[in-house]
Length: 500
Image (spheres, rainbow, N blue to C red):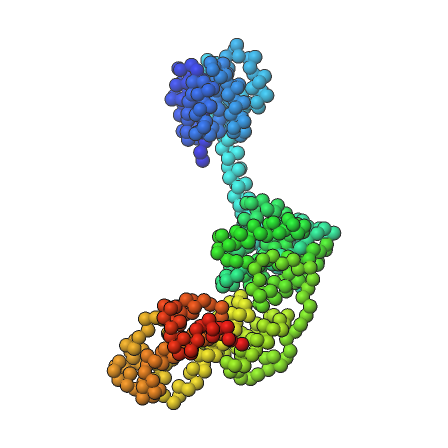
């Protein structure tokens, strides 16, 4: 523990005696500084924070009482002790006003000074220990509150909230809101944040941001999340102009700190705590709808629930799909904007799992994408499956090599030697066998795959040509443009404009 002592006396012998002939370290003092008058002492305390001031009263340039007043202003917790001769008694009233600990009569006896100051040192040490314990308690409570608030939010918006159990668990330590006030639920979606476990970290970071910037008082909000990575804010601040100001700063913070765009949905104001669930459902429903179909990035004021438009049963009634039927399915979804988003995502996940050739996304990860993303992922998988359907007619080594091409065509350094090694054949024999089976060279087949995928991306994505070029293993966009025009008789831009 660090305890610092400042000694001030204009008498050289007294100052040196107090500084050098008392074993301050054994009394618990870690640093001792000395000055000859008040003005010199004030210079010292610019870089030195005294816990105890031991000062003479009568000194030139600045007396001890004036010095003590300055020290008290700078360091309110500093303990004051005065050295006083008999003639200095007139100053003692001022010392009392300053709430000095005591005064020591001159001439000083070092043992008496050490005894007197040691008692003050013990008091300082006790206060510091108490402050450290309180700081630790506050930090622990702050961390506990962050965790508790997540649980609290989840319970408040639960459809099966047990109010009696809630009150016993949270009131009054963590929750003091009352009915007949104004509240709202706010949902925040982080775009392209594909870690579905990020909700807790986002809540903690946003909680700290809101408090540090004083955008909300501690009792005005609670932050939590549900099964995805979307933070949920429950707030008693419902004036929309104020909320928009706060949430715009939140969106700027998310963009600056994490690089994510975001959409925020504000549910309608409610006046009963039991209705927070309704405010949340309306905000969440609107947010999911906007993200699914429009990838909207701003702040939504959600005054009403969406008008329900469930998808018809026959929409996903097919037992088998082709690339054409999938394209038709997504055209319907884009045109109709059905509102049963979760059901549609579940059905699309089944299609995705059936068409994915690699390691599929988990359901939690899959939910974070948009309709445009789903169309691209599922149609891409189906395109690969259709490419594989005709392979049975070929030699097993050639089948293996084509599968390898389909899985690695996006790598610009993919070459015949690598493909032949994967098939377990020498390059020369591989090239001969490949042409015998397919009627084209391996390089021509690889180019066919890459050009087919270029058409796919032009039709099913909004990627720019240089991005598509990188995706298909032809990193030179100008070269890809030349190849495309030569093969299809039109530029990639013209092809994209002609897509249905």
